[in-house]
Image (cartoon, rainbow, N blue to C red; front, top):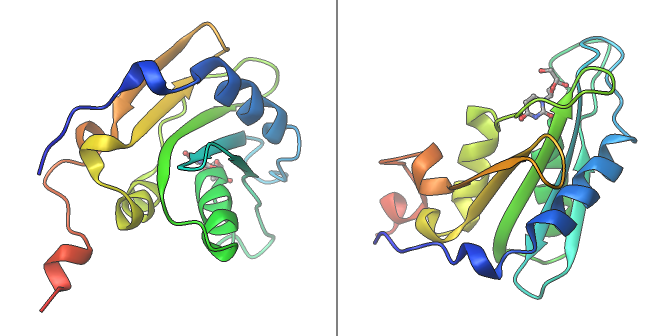
Length: 145
Ligand code: THU
């Protein structure tokens, strides 16, 4: 079921600042592309994450999944929004979540109700529902018997 996102309920600037702060912890010596993410959970706490690369390349993980897995591993599975701050050096780009991260978000949320913010700064950002970024998705419901 598709539902509207209540964008006015999301503290976008605060989430973006947290993502920018988390980005400072990024370990990205191979790509040089640093990403931070801030995940707002239902109880209005923020879990942050950064990308973590690896010399063997494939074990690397995105900032968004770091934040999601931190929350899930602490028993949190109900999420409202995620902000992403990414880029090389000082200047941020609009860093859209990769397909794998979108699919991981989709596992835990109703796509029409989850907000994704891609930010260059707390004042300059784009805001989407997960439904817009991952339409017609495959999810847990497909496997329910
Ligand atoms: N990356 C993220 O952390 N999130 C994204 O949304 C896109 C890509 C990371 C993975 C890798 O460490 C680097 O950015 C370059 O792809």
